[in-house]
Amino acid sequence: MATEQELSDFLKNVEKRAFKRSLYHVRNEEAALDIVQDSMMKLAEHYGDKPANELPMLFQRILSNCTLDWFRRQKRHHALFSDLSDFDSGGDDAEGFDLLETWSDSDPDQRVHSAEDMAQRSETLHGIEQEIKALPARQREAFLMRYWEEMDVAETAAAMGCSEGSVKTHCFRAIQALSKALRAKGIKP
Image (cartoon, rainbow, N blue to C red):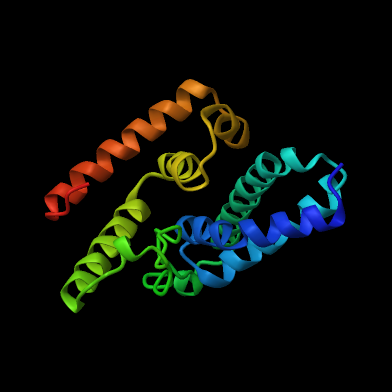
């Protein structure tokens, strides 16, 4: 059983990545924040008594379900109300977030040494983020879980509710699409 402190530490650790993942899906900052908060509340309410090692997979599954619920609510809302002007695709809502948050500025060998290097790095990261946003939803979800959340194939399959083969296919297609798009932009993946 996870202690209250373990649950709290887990939620603090996963908060930023979960927000970024939700933002990639819904492209609306407020909605992404609501989805993450709702997911955290559901995890604490319904699964806080589970072992700490089960929390990551449970949370990813809850986050996926909350995101799907958000899309269903949006679809119902838009079916009832013909005015779609309230629907925000979120264009630049992702500004200020770094896709490679794990990159460490504390390592002197990896520090950016000039304004030109910094501009190049910023342009590359922006290109990567734009291409990730453009991926089909299931490919994006599998890609982010596997390579950003660092979940293994079995955990990703369980969180997405699909087979391990489907996860591998989604990831392969996502990597192929990202590589092709980045090469077309002159960015070497």
